[in-house]
Amino acid sequence: MSTLEIRDLHVSVETENGPVQILHGVNLTVNSGQTHAIMGPNGSGKSTLAYALAGHPKYTVTSGSLTLDGEDLLEMTPDERARAGMFLAMQYPVEVPGVSVSNFLRSAKTAIDGEAPKLRTWVKDVKTAMDNLRIDPEFSERDLNTGFSGGEKKRHEILQLELLNPTFAVLDETDSGLDIDALRIVSDGVNRFSSGGDKGVLLITHYTRILRYIKPDFVHVFVGGKVAEEGGPELAEKLEEHGYADYVGEGAAV
Ligand code: ADP
Ligand code: MG
Ligand code: MG
Image 1 (cartoon, rainbow, N blue to C red):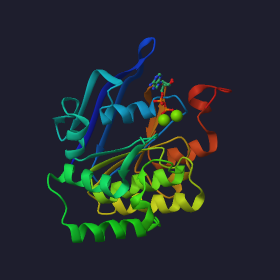
Image 2 (image 1 turned 90 degrees about the horizontal axis):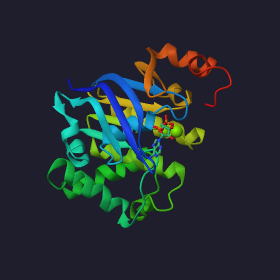
Image 3 (image 1 turned 45 degrees about the vertical axis):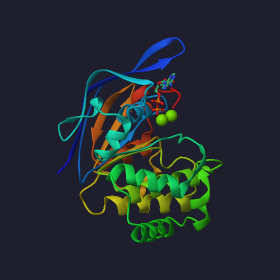
């Protein structure tokens, strides 16, 4: 079993006016085999947590710890975190003109495994994963994220997830901008990924609808840069009915 442990995490973000503290002591433990949903209103710090896990240079851990099987993630570069088994799908993936999807995937796989994948099995694996996600074969020759629609970006994230086969997946708003068919295809991909029972998923979302397709074992409600409440799947149902008003007060912008 693998364990991703977030302990009393405080994170600040670099802004034009200096650093601003966003996370105020987050505690969360994800074991392999578990799916955790992080839900919360806009601006509650959900993406900040994802960026901190990824090692984004603008986000500074001011105190607390992040460990993967006891190893300090904070001592690792983003690449080293990926090699250790972390996968971070960003809410706003970067565009890289001049690098095709297929080259990117192969380089990423090579970097993570420490050796190039065998060409024949790799080509087959890519084809299977793309078929699963109903991605057009021509997509693999497109420039990375350049001119991708919202839905294409999300499918590409899940394509990476399937091919790179990490231990822990952090998926930030994987459901945003998806129509109902795409949501189902993407959710099926996440479920395929976790179906072996040896993967951990941290699913960050503002809306409850993706949780109809991806069943979380645990739900954590994020408010003001902290976990305000946690529970099982029933908590998502409560949020579906009541929204976040109970946590942030009536009339608050969520
Ligand atoms: P969420 O993902 O829950 O919507 P975020 O983590 O994106 O929340 O943002 C939390 C708070 O941190 C917001 O008030 C946001 O404005 C602020 N913030 C996050 N990143 C930056 C940044 N790069 N520059 C300035 N403020 C930021
Ligand atoms: Mg947001
Ligand atoms: Mg966000």
